Length: 406
Image: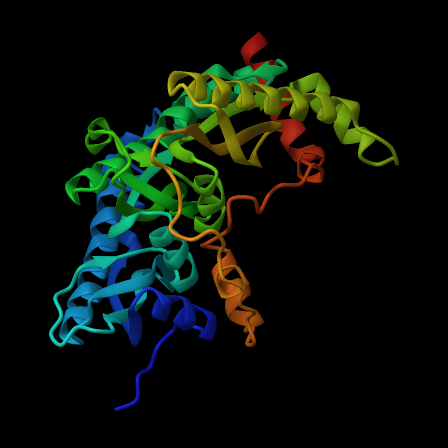
């Protein structure tokens, strides 16, 4: 019977060099009603902002059910592992589907197989990971559903009248973002791993809230000291980037992130709004975003010092428009450190491990529909979004001020 796999030619080539052969595509899913989550998100738990624990649990359980069903299917196929695991949310009208997909793989020399591992890495990334000395254990994820909240919103309105950082928002966002990282490390410990590599972070709009989810591969590396069994290393470097650093003796030690929430202020908002009608630099927005960026990067530097890192590499920055002239600036990178015994099995990577496969079929209708739910983290990286928060928003602010002053 013919094998039906999601693996590309380059992935199959790389896997065969690691003694692995392709198997069938495997899928697991779970569907729930959005009404259940909507009723919770409108409750008292969202009044004060921060994590909405019930929604986090519902999403986590849905993702886990989909993943478990995918693994069960791989075991029925007699697979040794699953590569390229994804764990997505798909909207179906008033219902939401948790969908886990991967490609089953087999040991080339094995006559009978036991299921050994699952990984978020595709075939090419898995080659790099294994060649760098990491033994994959399990696909892991950490998530947190959170809300700014009514209380936070009122504080935000008041604080937004003045220009500068809104520390209440910065604290809420910083704590929730670190919760996802804490939870993915907890799953890695349960899998007997001392590392989570290839982490990908997404921030998804969800039933009037946001979900931050990190996915990666819990792995074991023999060069890591025993202390990392309880505090696994984390890295959001791609596996080929990580291979390049480890080839030079550097080990990733921690994914670091910094959050800063800033307000343009009422006067700055009015000024920038009218300036947006004429050509030229909007100085108020330039200096605001610069300040937010510097603050977020300072948080990253502070975290890196706590881990005695030599460098922070692969920094990515994202800007979010929270409305009302308020922006969030998020910076993510990986702290690395020179360690003894760190190297790669090969001196160079084969070209097939780093060539990016090209999509040959693009369904624009599906892409447009999916983007409303699975918007990537940098989708709102546009300065122009902040200039046009609108005459109506300004009018509401003036009314609010008049009420307060009475």
